[in-house]
Image (cartoon, rainbow, N blue to C red; front, side, top):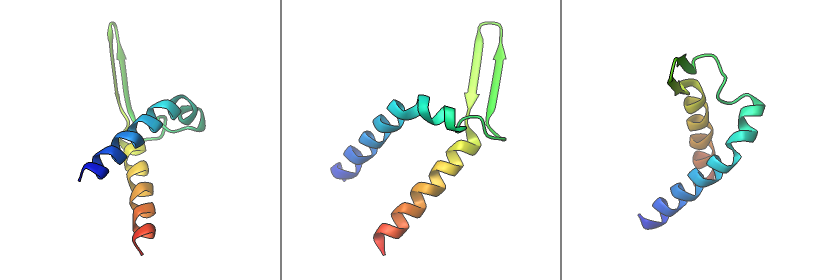
Length: 66
């Protein structure tokens, strides 16, 4: 289990470092991503982006287990 936690942590760090590049590609601005901006308040919920990333990771893990 500790290997899984280390792997998940490293993946989150890599995604965090690559996030500015990923937003240029279009991730984070897909239809279904919620972005609310008001005076002194910003709310961003990347629902579609999260689902897309989850599907890609699931597909990769499914292929690696075969």
